[in-house]
Image 1: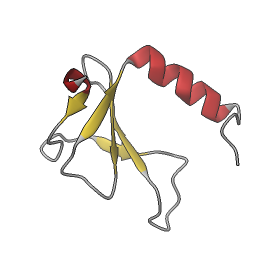
Image 2: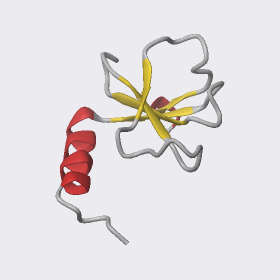
Image 3: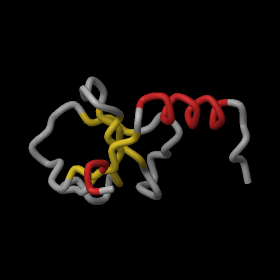
Image 4: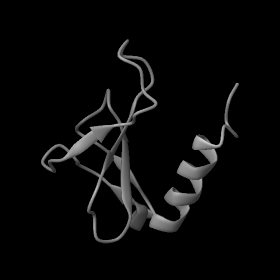
Amino acid sequence: MTDRIIPNTFEQTGWRKSSYSNSEGGSCLEVLDGHPTGVPVRDSKSPHGPALLIPAASWSSFASAVKAGHFCV
């Protein structure tokens, strides 16, 4: 499973915070677009890594489910 972890992500540029994150500095996700093998995802409070590398199809399914409200509390 180590092939799905990027140990140090600080040097990679282009991270963006999830549009579902708020500005109060709570639980925030950052994603990196354009990675050749998937979608890197990291905690914004830990920009030095690690990041999980999610397969593109899995990320797409997850994002669709979030947008549809399947994870509302």
